[in-house]
Length: 491
Image 1 (cartoon, one colour):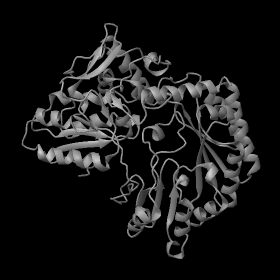
Image 2 (cartoon, one colour):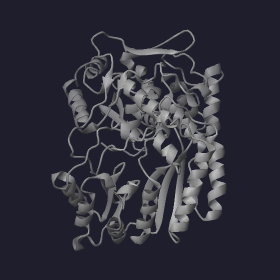
Image 3 (cartoon, rainbow, N blue to C red):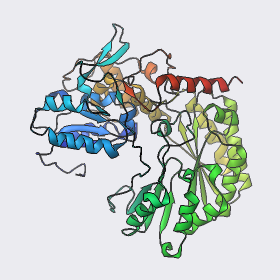
Image 4 (cartoon, rainbow, N blue to C red):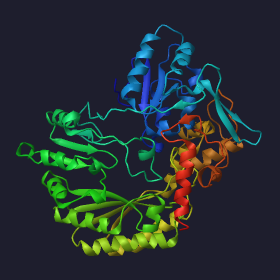
């Protein structure tokens, strides 16, 4: 069932779950549990409580910060995993809670945190996370949906975050494999449904209920039949639809694509350039030339679109002041070559993500000043710079790189203020035992120093909090990808 956050559950409910796509949404789990009168700690739940489960990219990459609050974590694609989980719950309906959890833990892709115990050295170093029973798997592997038939909206409502819009997943993952990108690495392999094998049917189903259509994916224009899809949507029968698409690959654009998008109600395009420095784009494996970026801007204007949004980052590994200046120069040149086109630069701070080659890197503290520099350079040139908060990026990194020792901090923040100052105060309070929280039913060492989690470049031999959870690419191969990236800077 779907429920509003204020709506009470039927107390006979067997399951209570959520999906997380962004680290900063994680604390909402505690609020939802409290509103439904479910104990926030999995160890304290009784036979009358539902099984609390979670999924989505954040929990697939690293569920450990929320592990003490979750009974079950579903790792990976849900197309087969979720039905397997629900069917198993039905079969185990009359069994005890403890027996259910142990049986669920034997199903591929299902992680039961309470049945896996972290081990720490005397100085607080994580030594590993191991099953407490010998008949449980030593590690759990993310599940992959191997079919090219992908998802689309099943509920269309004016109450949604994007009202009355039918979302269709055009591609999953991304073949470019930018080395910071969890959306690419964690969701491999790249998949795309063919037009006649589900994609057109999914679009038609939604358009029978609404005239608003959204095409989703990390890079939708890399669908091998994207132009054919747009040509089909360019028929007169679709004249009244409003079409929007997510981020596109600059090198795949042409004037025919932008003209059809403008004709179908799109006002802007979004492309991710990450950096104006060609050297840095090589480091991160962004296979994109300056000429392709300029061409994308030209096609955007020629097609009749009014706005071009470009996504970029500061704080990428090996980045220098020269790379930041290159970004400013590139954006200014785009503005000069396409007068009248509204240029928006969406800027974020690099955050190391679990299950990517840059998971061993840290947030770079000079990023804050580099955001200010770009503001100073771009604003007078009429470029609309929209920067995400550097401070909240550090909290993203805290979630991305922490283990279960973050759980008391999450609780402390919930009981005070979810602000940057609140997070730092709570973290310090938990480390120094100076903060009062609800009684914690599990014994956890103090969390490591703040700077070590957020800013440090970790040694490749470090045991990672998610080392017992297998993504699509092994840790050894991720290290090789990082080595290739960092060596680019020395060539």
